Image 1 (cartoon, rainbow, N blue to C red):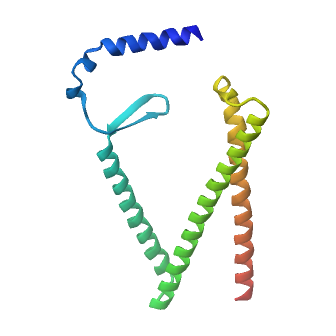
Image 2: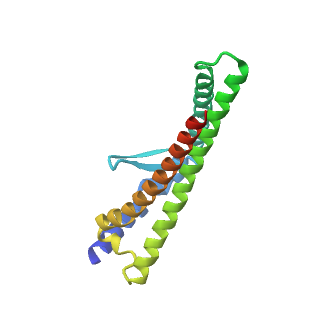
Image 3: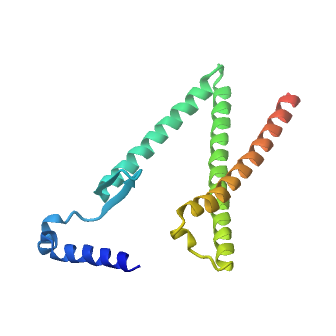
Length: 169
């Protein structure tokens, strides 16, 4: 622990004595977004650039899904009624998939919280700071297990409904 404290103290002394802090007005950019890219480099950009990127992605998704819906609805369909029905089925499947995704994220979060609570009850809370692999195995396996369970249950239910629909027609 003393070595960590010495390192932090050295960094703080360097930052306090640096030229950047003496005249910080030229380094002011407003709100910034920072993230690590695979441990290789730090990416930073102003928050308004992030907003533009988010809007561009949202527009691209809407264009892609609209094109996919029209493409799916026009395959093998001659009548406008059939095209609307096919587009409706595609949108229903899309909404169902998004709901399953959100549901699996929610239950994964609940499972991770349950595991964290159990670890805390055992008196080992935050032990994974010194053992990073333990965090991956403990929380990662719980998350992957729940994700696989939910997607398997939904897949089995959807295939069963598909078989029932194809047999009745």
